[in-house]
Length: 626
Image (cartoon, rainbow, N blue to C red; front, side, top):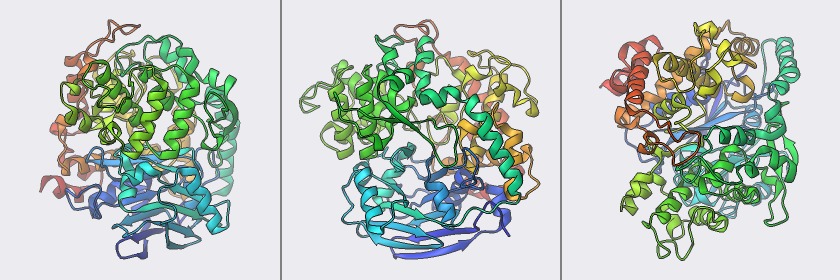
């Protein structure tokens, strides 16, 4: 009997309206686990090189992992992937909530969606069966209305729904996929892939609990997580990720006006403390999680904000707030609701708007280009209007919906100087001039700039729990925050491999983070769930394997070391603030990239044949070497 897995992958061909089930061997699970690694494996195995991300040949994959649906805090996540319409390379995003656990309890480890429906459909998965259903009546609906309509149609309010909003239908290149209204597979434009397939939603309902090899050990670890992690994560529990606003601002690292400066009046108005004091109605949790880091915000004035959509996290607050020159917390709460309802990635959407605002500030765009909208930094109404215009591809919104990199090329007139993307994806709201190791991680990320398989340099600058958890890998000495030496890159690579494993398992980094559950206890949990004699070494190798699969996919799709870039802005200092005299050093940064290639065994940015064979990926060699 398999433990931690159902052993079944649902395959749905929307063109042929055909559903089938693949049986997966246990060794395949142990090699690729699930989530991100399973997606990398499937895309490399099944996609022809060069397919159109928005064409029928692309495949959209929802993948759980062995820990998804296990009753331990942090084990409610799933991963979604495809060839990205934003970057043209490997696309993936992880989401929390309850949907992933429901997929496992409905009898499947993953869903591979192929082809393209002739008219809008949705997929209903229940207890080992699946059905393609008509969604013509759902097309055009926002997230809440769509979820409620599906639940009413199926006569079950406990159905979990992953869906796209109008942005996905309109093929916005950074459209997201949401579930439970407040969890998002946000990055790389997966919602546009779903929209191109005319797939409005995937609804799940399951009754079977995930089998585990050692129930008593799983219960013991689950109790430890419940008793210990909320204390470790007290700031997350109290304030959500928005607790970062005040400390980042004090260090000059809160992105402001498209990363132009480090000072803005009223930054504290955007903090998690302010959110809790003014608009928080309650905390929410994901499946089985004791931390409850999700917010629920309700407003009646100056904007009406529906708490069903949850509340803004740090990235959303900074993207629509400070980086647009806005310190109005009510406006960022409304921006969260609008972006969630229409289904856009708040990071990329906020980046697109702040890019447009800088173009407007510099005279590259005028009111004629914006249909009369005063797109100046600090204009809350303009920011809110642009979210909807992007989602509906109206006016300038149609250009920005292509993503900043494409928009800059279309606008011209020097707009590319304000293009803050890597591999075509907008930067997360973390300042690489403060955290250069994270900056290298942005550049090396297979999905384009991403902070979710990366490091925060500040966490390794002292004898911290994060550093101590890497002792088992031979890492003992802290490294200064501004360091870009091989010692820092070594930490980045080890920590990233752990993160890629977490995205394959699939579980929550906030719970499993080194210094909390950590590497050794996580390996212990995998043993208890699967019955395998796994080790910390093995799970780190799974993460390395996942990263190399994604890198190989990018190489095959034409991405090279030249795409491991950093926008020029970060090699100049911000106009004001604590980082005013601290730009990234271009020379040190380029040296750090070369160090990364050397340690990772990626000569000229391409995984070496020997590295692929060492990881059990010999079959990938002809994919990238011919």
